[in-house]
Image (tube, rainbow, N blue to C red; front, side, top):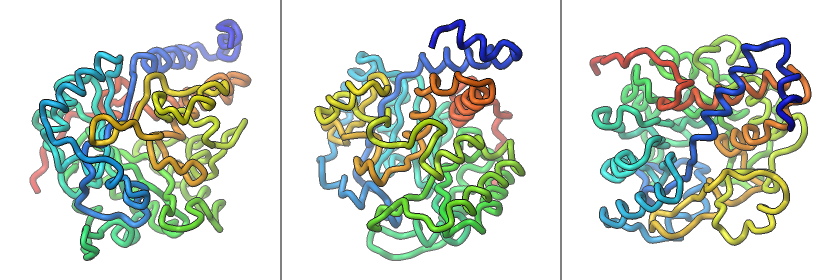
Length: 358
């Protein structure tokens, strides 16, 4: 869209226009790729896309520290300055995380919360902590040992590990089966001194992972909790509607518009030519440090409602928001809320970490 047309949308709100330029400017400086640190995990979450799709069998883990160091250096040379580290469970291999920290400006780790990421040496690493369903449902869905045994208190353990830790953002996959748990769960996160962003729980272990019977109830409750806990829930109302329904005001989320695809994967040649944007330089690498995976998650596009992919779709589509002041404001708030998730972002304003005894 022409700059003068953008400016006209903001003509009566100069402050919002400056916020728009600031978040746009920062976003252009961040170039992210995703890295599977390991195939190993200390739990087996019900419906986990990684194990449901047998990613642990698709590549052999490269355990050489020298190879990892060379690989990360090559990624920096490729233009990547932001690493999203997933697994398996990355905190099982802290030295590997440290390698990314040594070479990249921005590092984020996705963890199940069972084991803590040390603070010393990792002060500027964003920690995304997974949470499914909330309340007792979280243990039902996630507190499962690799051998199938059950345990309890996974969420409470994560809260203990990251109490008043400014690095921590809980990524809360809400589901209609856990509607009654949403407010209580968010309150616990607030009282623990952390932030939360909503995700959507996809039942990858079922035939129709996105099927819902009470979508409107789930949406209404998520919006109500956001209104009641505005400083704790980073997700905006626009994003909450999109993550639950899979729809924006101009389209539905799908493979044809998802930007979080690996640009070097040969399957995407046609997709990259269809006119919809993709994240520049973005690839997802397997733990062998060679295999480029299909996308940021499972590759099962019809079943996907991944929060980071959906966020990226909305953020790269700013041109669709520049038709009215209300939509432009929604996009600016959306973009700010995305970067507020990250401790290394200038949009994340946090008090100094409080040291709390166990």
